[in-house]
Length: 73
Image 1 (cartoon, rainbow, N blue to C red):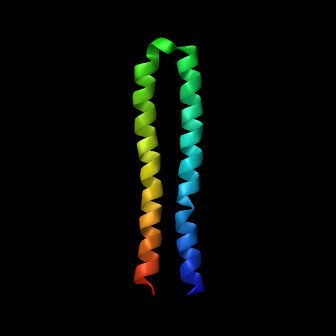
Image 2 (cartoon, helix red, strand yellow):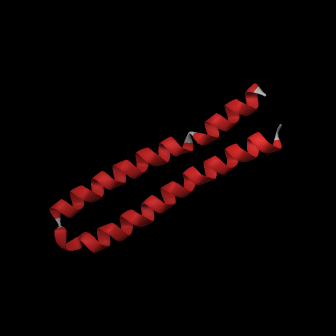
Image 3 (tube, rainbow, N blue to C red):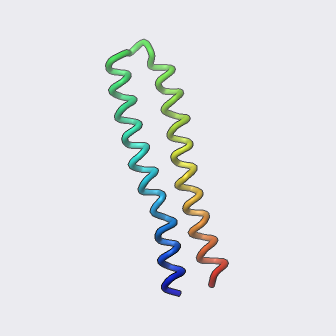
């Protein structure tokens, strides 16, 4: 049971990577908007797409962790 918990914990760590990635992307987007306010729409579109993709990896990690816990009992 200990190895299953360890594997699930490692799988859930994808959420930390996604959080860091989204934070960095948001800070860079804010800097870009401050430099070029007229490009705000394009920057926001790219930011939202990137955040969605990063969040998807966190969700995949969570699903894998649940599968590890539920299927390997």
